[in-house]
Each structure stands twice: as structure tokens, then as C-alpha cells.
Length: 130
Image (cartoon, rainbow, N blue to C red):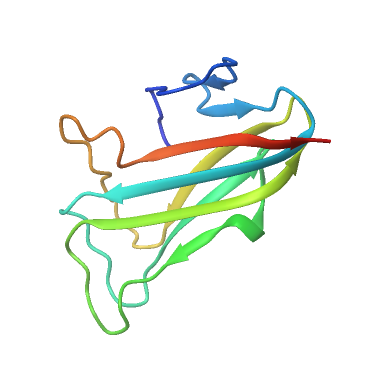
């Protein structure tokens, strides 16, 4: 789970910075999006990857997972930006979270320079109640 400690807009108060989760207020069709920016000291080698995953009540939603690989045969040692989005049905009370996974075997840092709070984010909104 990514530590998301700043809320830019949440008119219903449905996002918790302590759990990093959004609790759906009503049954409906929702749009969720997320992005991460790895710092320029992160290294991804050929064949390694990073995934951005969406979970509903701690269960992975595989159709919304985005997987990024560096260019084939190349090592990647600069800023690395990954995004995902998806539309899904959510029941009132279910909690949506974003998590990242990477298989480098080493800790990779997210970009966290002063004023960089918009580079790693998670959000969503109700499209239509059901």
C-alpha cells in the first residue's frame, strides 16, 4: 500500500489517510485512477517490472492492474512514471486501495521532492449509482 497522506478533494470525506483507502458511500459504477513516479535513483533492469494494482476489500482486481517493463534489453535508471485507470462496480462500504509491486529485489524510491505530491496519487469518482 502506498502512503497517501494528502487529500486534494474529497467532498464526502470517504478517503482515509490512515488506511489509504476510499470507502464507497453508495453502490455504483466508479472510475479509479492512480499513478506513481519512481525517483531517478531507482533502477529497473531488462525483464524487471512494476505493477500498479487496485484492490477492493483487499482482493486484487486483475483487470485493472497495469504492468510496466523497461525497454527490452535496456536498464532504466531515470525517473519512471507508471499510470493505471479502470471502471468497476463497487458496493457501498467496500474499501478501494492502490498498491504497487516491483520485482527488482531492491527497495525503489518514489519521487518525494518538495512540492512533488501530485506525482504519486490515487483517486476516483462515482459515475452512476446502481
